[in-house]
Length: 180
Image (tube, rainbow, N blue to C red):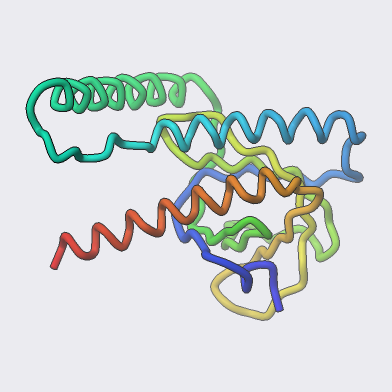
């Protein structure tokens, strides 16, 4: 049984940075990081939220849609500019949920039991990562050579990650239906 066996999984190519650490930081630092991660996820959820289609397509609603499109374009441009200025980690094909992640690294993974500081960039228009801690788990041979269980993840943050994954899953289903 792995951390990825519970709940929905998001499979995507995302920027992932990782660093082996000796120990988790002090509680106060982890709590501050959790609050920052919550702000990142709430911002991402707001960024990805689109206005619902109303029955009345006249009046204010079309103007709100135009403003939403303009704001979305502006956010993409700002994210692209910031991405050029920052040294962002490489993309990795990965799978993750609120319990852990799995991916294939180009290099040998850290040994089982190692603690990691992870930076997971969920959206190109928002070049602020989720900063998480995890432990490298042993895994069976397969396409992924790294399996990580998240450590010290507050419930509110896990709930926000699950909400993000659910929205991505729902969008993927809608895209498939539209493609038929």
